Length: 563
Ligand code: NOJ
Image (cartoon, rainbow, N blue to C red; front, side, top):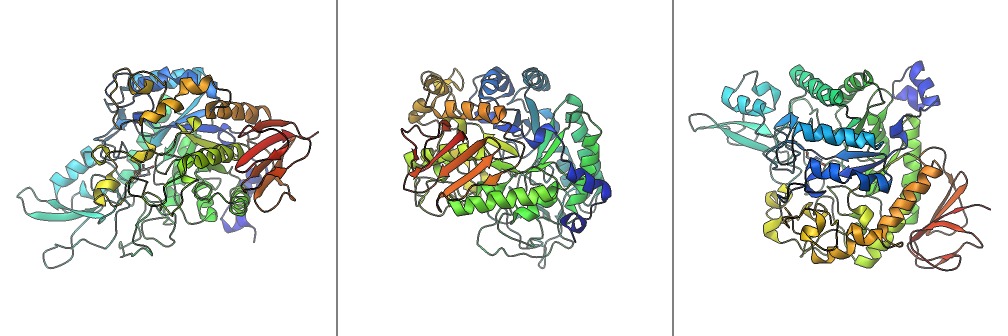
């Protein structure tokens, strides 16, 4: 049986697989904007949409094909906007719908596509539906849009099951009836302010179709779909005890009753058809933390989503054999369903790769790094590895995601004061896990000036370290060896050699610590070992670190054209 038969595809789909298309999202470099930390036009300390518009020229100069914006919709910001109260409006913190439209058309005028974040697993507890549900009481149609249940125990004092929130603590909270007595419980896989929708209810499907159309009609080029593996829960909501003491976003475990339930694929088959009604190859990208690449590939079968984040790649250690295996496995698994592989090293949920690649102790996903964390990263090793890792990644076939600030080589901020921390993880674990604030600190645009050019008032929702003057964009623009200029040149060469498309051929003979491959006219050699690797007489097109001679030093990647 071939894989496509196993996946339940018909003859037409088989043909489509044989002829992968030329849609933009197959090869695009997509830059993630975390709006609250990108640029702050109104000076209130939180970035906004006009701030994005003001800096589109910088992104065009960098050479990205598209931007993905983390949520800017109406939200009480209990989870930095991933708690949406109105899916079809802009939160005043970030601007207005007019600001959004202006940003979108300014991006399109520069040839930059725009993807927005859609959060369908849960809403904010301030969403009108949830407020209606609280008011309407047990058994009502309003409650049936979420997962309300009676508690266990004599008077319902125990939660309906033992599920844990990803952010720590129980995944259930109890409501209070209008007369002050304790009421039913509701499920929240994340914070208590993020109640999960009940996707077995057709009303929820209808509402999200409306939301998709709202943004598609405005002209967005696609959606990054939050928790795309979580919408459907196992019948009966059975108890589940994770193998480790920490609930995760799903990356480590199989058979979890709230992740990767078969029924979730029906949602994306429906959305695939809806999105296909629009011109311009609009795309859906899954944020789905799953235990294997093969599982993740199920989200991008030809009639489902178009891309899925490659978290297996992101989580791979700085180890040549492991990298070869994950690259090989990704190209194979995604290729088998006719989808491009994606590549990603950083985002707003993980320790920045300029720090993560030089950690000296285990750091489970979501824990973050703070003043008391063991195994702090070695800064110069981390930056060097990050530059080498990105130089390797941007030579791979498929679509690549960049996270704002990585083009500046920004490290994780470790010494944030406790009082400044805002990630719900920090609060829900009583400070045991630092969480994700360290990768979310506002960007330094200028060495001098208030908040390093993030705005002109100096306000900043998370404090920027003084050392960030050295990372500022204006300083890096003037320095040919800067990380910013490395990224700019990598993107220019990636476009010139059409590296997003085509095949990858492994090159052997460089030793166990090297990842080497051929991409058409280009050879790429990444040295992850301690000893220099001699390449003979080649003219390098690009080097992640400047060096003389022909021996590639430790933690360095080069691209060269064969003679
Ligand atoms: C994944 C998002 O990337 C993360 O930031 C958020 O906290 C959770 N989903 C919940 O929406």
